[in-house]
View 1 (cartoon, rainbow, N blue to C red):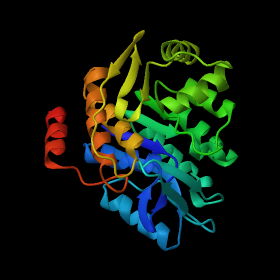
View 2 (spheres, one colour):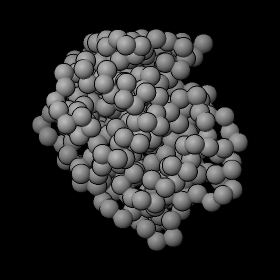
View 3 (cartoon, rainbow, N blue to C red):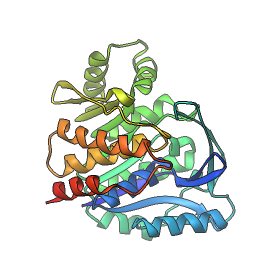
View 4 (tube, rainbow, N blue to C red):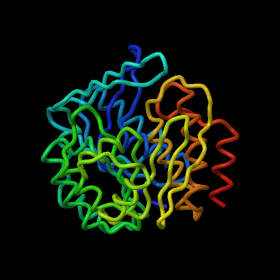
Length: 298
């Protein structure tokens, strides 16, 4: 299966240590570990961090052919401050390479000639007009089987019209319970109960699947008119950076292997729970998780 992803590749700075990151990069890395052939569309600088980012992509098996080297904007960095429960607060540097993702016509043609199982994108990379233009150029041309939108709100880097257009372009979307509250007020000017929210969201934007994560309290999955709860796993938490991205990967992998949405969410919970028990967004999987993923691929 082939996955195409669009958006930020950056370095998270946590307790003075640098970790490769960015939600699309994290998702690409996890999907690759699960057996996808993942391609990321992004941009870095020619600086040390940019070179290291490209090496990280290569090391993790991500196709970096569409990660362009920007002539003067620096590679993205994010300062991450963790509270006592491992929950992050982000300070995201602006005017960086991934704010200006560029594709020439040859690359666009190459992308459109490939059959993609899924295309994945989020909100943060849409904070610049240039990126929104590229994204809206790509989506109508690639015609993947599924389009996954990770709402992933960060700081004040979102607008109602970006979110609405993204939802309309998608078949599957994921958000957390706090983002659900924000979207309820932003899109519908009222605070819905969760069931009413997902029903309205699915109807208004023609979404097939909506995933809402609740941290240790599991997740809620809406599909075919039903809202179902999936239990969480009460494990240790080191930091939650990348937890949502690993959940997305586990869900998409299991669902695209042919499992129902609840079974897909169960794997997502296992992957996400393991990742938040480690430092960094894409740790090495333990043997038991590798075995479970391998069994699903058969």
